[in-house]
Length: 170
View 1 (cartoon, rainbow, N blue to C red):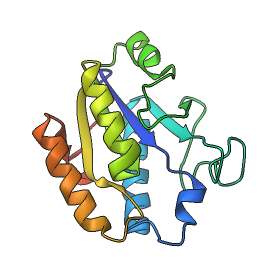
View 2 (view 1 turned 30 degrees about the horizontal axis):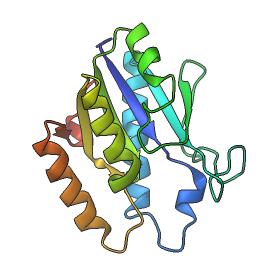
View 3 (view 1 turned 180 degrees about the vertical axis):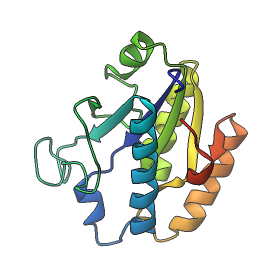
């Protein structure tokens, strides 16, 4: 058990799976995220589910705002509600992680060039080691595969550690 790590599941919410341009490789993405959550739960690694709210399709409390039904949230998990791309901005996430002695965040979720990117950079700014699961984030862009590849490369160049789902250990 590595108590210095936490898994951040960013914005895996129902409305994002219902857009006219579908989430790229949604089935594979959900399976990879489920695998990460199961591994984290088995090892006792804290899991944080982040939910974005806005005034349109992700209105807080709406059906679309809810976490995807395939996610297995337990009572031990922490829910963080946010209104900005960076999950650390104006949320209790940083305080929750610090209180638990966590210095490494493993990032997975939606969307690549939005909240995933912003949270990786925000975590780095606060001094966390950031691991981005390179096959554990996606988006609904018409060129989704190239967006994922581009941001994996750009974030890696900033010092974010990239790992495949199968390479992750908790």
